[in-house]
Image (cartoon, rainbow, N blue to C red):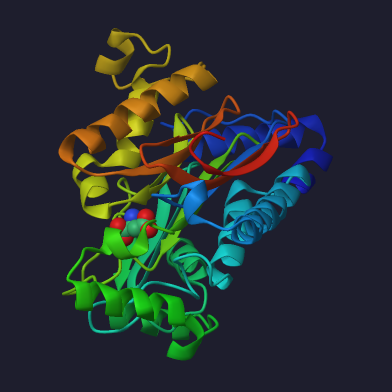
Length: 360
Ligand code: ASP
């Protein structure tokens, strides 16, 4: 049942539907239509400083971010689902060779593009994730299809490709994903014996988190990983709870950064859990398993503080990166401990911005 269809029903069937939905997700805070929506997006974090970028390049990145933000905002403004907005944003960024996802993904040590992606739906915490994919044009669509199929959450390599073929997802040859700039980065990494961080300067993963007018949250992340990754390495992006997480009771998160550290901290779920537990829930409620209820009041300041604190833990371990977060209150925030992060946010309250450097 679409949002518009639900609105056009008379009050009684709509109430019955709400009851049916509440019974099917008994432990979920039941989302309510508020008319409020929020969207935050990222295109990776890293050592992004003005002196390392020409004004033309900066304008190109800003235009790409704005176009992706507009695509997602249009979905939400029209009353569409948070998950549809997330997909609309990420497909655009995957198709753009400037970002490290889909076309333009970084190379593995063996000179391949191996793609990771994940989505999560905050209504019932259903999720889909894929890793090591090489021939699916838009890995985020594959992740969503895995979620819709529902039998498994996380598929890898050849099995994920077979699933994609069975579900008629669009494929592309290696030449679609490969770009000269990324190949040079791999060659430089090998020749100069430096780390991925030295050649990439930024992480470049893409992600989106959204709150729709029905109060539902969704998150998605897509990446090529890190230059020179080996041995089937999987980063945080497709690991549910590390780089991607959504729960209507607390927040939706998408991360970018040094994946190994984000996995160790469990960044995305850690932020959501802290927010859920810092809601108005009493300790007795928690002990009885009655978490959060419908009273979650997660202000922008609280969401920012909690996200910063979790990112501080990543930094304490030696990692860096950033997150985007939206909450049921409409809060849409970024937090990063790198010099910059490609990012943008838009809300029903009139916010509409894109930015790259830390001081913006
Ligand atoms: N987090 C990603 C990974 O470790 C990299 C990125 O953010 O670009 O695979």
